[in-house]
Image (cartoon, rainbow, N blue to C red; front, side):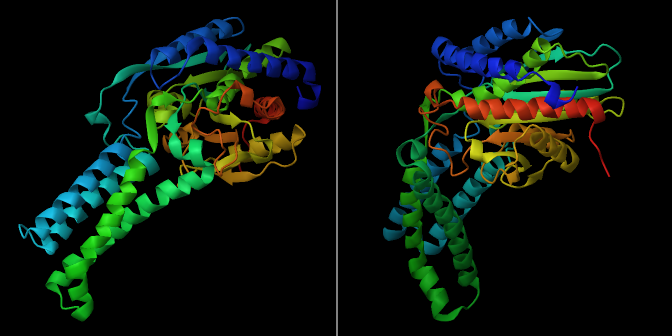
Length: 425
């Protein structure tokens, strides 16, 4: 079947269905912290829906530490503040000299920057072992072909919602800059200053070296003050409703199968899977767990497999194929990204572009890192959007037009993949 032959009424009905379902999930199940009971209840609700038009549905369990990913904002800010203040007092009372104080602060800042980079930039499970783990679940639903499975396309979206980020709630993009720039910049500068001062203690650097040994420590006070802002960055007591980020992605996956069923589309050799992950907001943990468990199956030459992760369908002017991910450090499969791009054009959306998730990451990065062919489709203002990770992300901010366009792109991608697979040079 060509996309032009797919009934538009089915797509429109599923957009209406999505808006009603997202509203219901938010009202009925409450805040969906990664791995909590509300997430599970919402997944159970979705499973009942999926059971009506899928051949098989099941849960896959894994262990997750929900707060490990972002709790560094509390721990490193407190560690740096205490270290700077304590070393300043000890220096002024001549218990230690400023050189020793620089060494101590330099080590604490270096460790803090390492934790930040590993957890927040690279999404490694670097300090997860220090936190309490709970059982979370990914929901998988499969629509099987009539014959032998030769191709498999997975549409994925995460069901968990984020802890509230105060800078975006109160200051939008300016709040992010005001909070993050001094903290990160101050931390990097403090490490460099400490390192230069240590060198100046052993190498004659003239008056510059004397200045560094005598006065440079006071810059660390600025860094400590900046850490106060970082400490209040995340409100762990408040969970975003997550209507757009990412119940729109969740229902993109579910409705992909629902639309095929309503349109009476049955593939001969292509299996279509809806995967609802948990734990994206705590460092892609659900996608990482699924990729680890299925890497052999999903990279087998016997069945060509691709994963399209959908993360927020709201700001239509930013509906793009995000072929670069994880702050630009991960490059998704070029050929599959091109297939999604071409499918968007075929579906009538000519403004599609290849884009970069330059701040943060999507579940697609976890699959690509595991060697599984994947890419990301999203429509969110990267500024970031004023609803991103805060209480404004509720059902009253849904944009049906963006959801409908996203659904067209997804259906077009599925149909093109079924017909030709991923064309590679």
